[in-house]
Image (cartoon, rainbow, N blue to C red; front, top):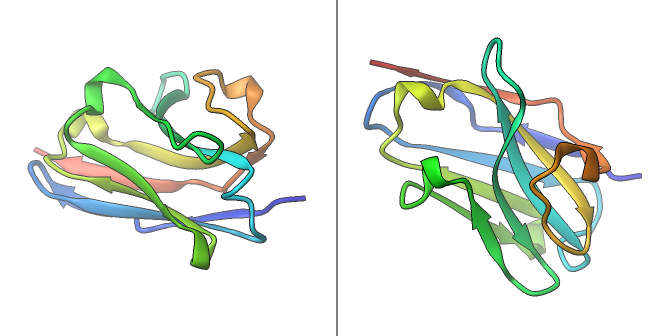
Length: 123
């Protein structure tokens, strides 16, 4: 069983930055793909970014490319999502998630989920 705990959400003005953290209960970063999804009110949960430990590949949804960066600190079993140039449309609950091996854009392919952290971007 893997437990994931997100932190770092909050309220920020448009154009600002936040860094989300996802701490894993045990070492998984060498064998798992770690992803971030988000869900805005009334919308489906969508994949935002993912990093695959098996091949180091990173993926981003088009709407965040060039603004968000995903990385990890293996020594701390923690993965990060650095968000810059935030827009009101980035407002959502952000979830950290994990699955074996490689990234997937499909929510149903992930086995472990954090509780979510709220990000609110004001205009």
